[in-house]
Image (cartoon, rainbow, N blue to C red; front, side, top):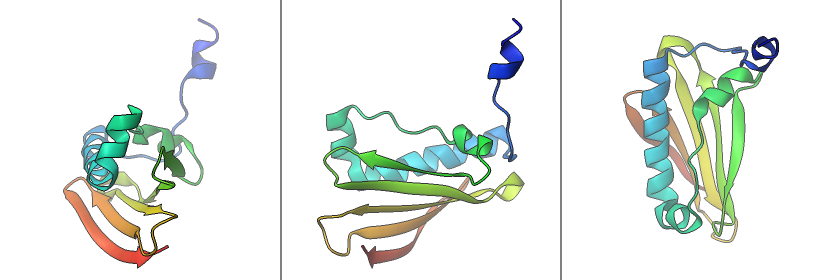
Length: 115
């Protein structure tokens, strides 16, 4: 029991739990839209966004097996108006890059054709 306080996460950013859950669901939908077959084939476990709230710079990258690329994602805003940005690409396909803005209300394609 003395280790429990040391092992508990320390959140540096605040996003209401219901907002975080909705953003995560919308982010997962973007991932499935972009790489669904590869995710199923690899039995890929979709990332939890709560981990980002522990980081000073709340962003990460995850590589997708056989995609030759993956997803870079970060919170551009936190709090009640939290917003996640994500960029995905395949290095062997010119112009495959896509940037999405993800909120609790859905996702929007912001840019494409890079990479």
